View 1: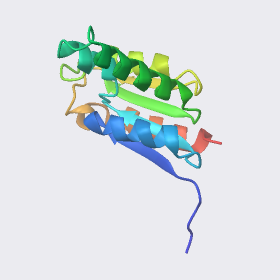
View 2 (view 1 turned 120 degrees about the vertical axis):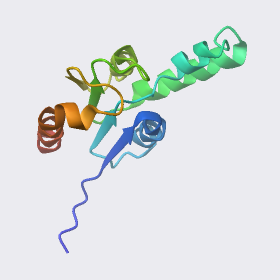
View 3 (view 1 turned 60 degrees about the vertical axis):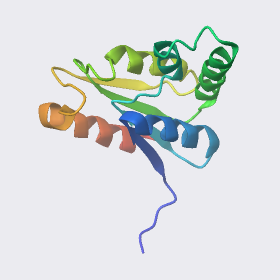
Length: 135
């Protein structure tokens, strides 16, 4: 019925965590897309004052090591003026994805919840290109 074995995983906002988990543990995936992703555990642990604890430091390090092991192509889409999940979070996640040569698509003037309205054409062009370029 037209089924293709090509599968991609996408996570938005807090959904970045489960998407990163799937990308790290599902070898048959062809790509990872994160939109406005809150996938930086270190930031969350630090904001709660737990980074200086042994558990917090181990949690952050384990998460970062897992993200670094991801080897599928990755696209990160983020609003330039996102105040809920700052652009720096996407930049950190991009830098952790060392095995994927990820692309970070920044939507100018977009925040966390208006990214589609502000940058619809850029958003869908980036996804279309990513899907067509994926191995």
